[in-house]
Image 1 (cartoon, rainbow, N blue to C red):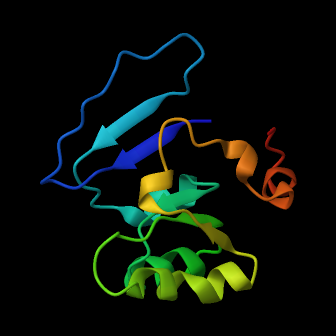
Image 2: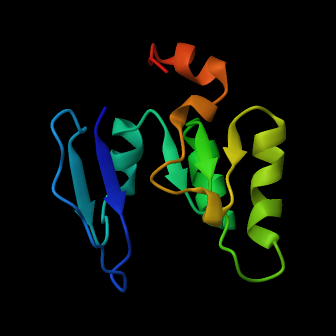
Length: 117
């Protein structure tokens, strides 16, 4: 597993030193070629704006949607049709912490690509 984290140009990250056994991690403020990122991905963890949900669905990737915790809940509503069809899950922003476990993923996601839980 490797992680590519596009965090947005206005955001800064406070990263710890990697521990032995941590997956490779690359953080970038912006990606000019999302098509290449999607092509390399097996899973996407993302916000659930309308365009992001459409793009991730169009390329057929499973996703963990993390709606912005502001507004009227429209980002959650954007993700629900995909979630209800089995293409993803919604995790609240406050719940997606370093302790959040990939063991919460539906079992078929792991077997889909030969991942280990």
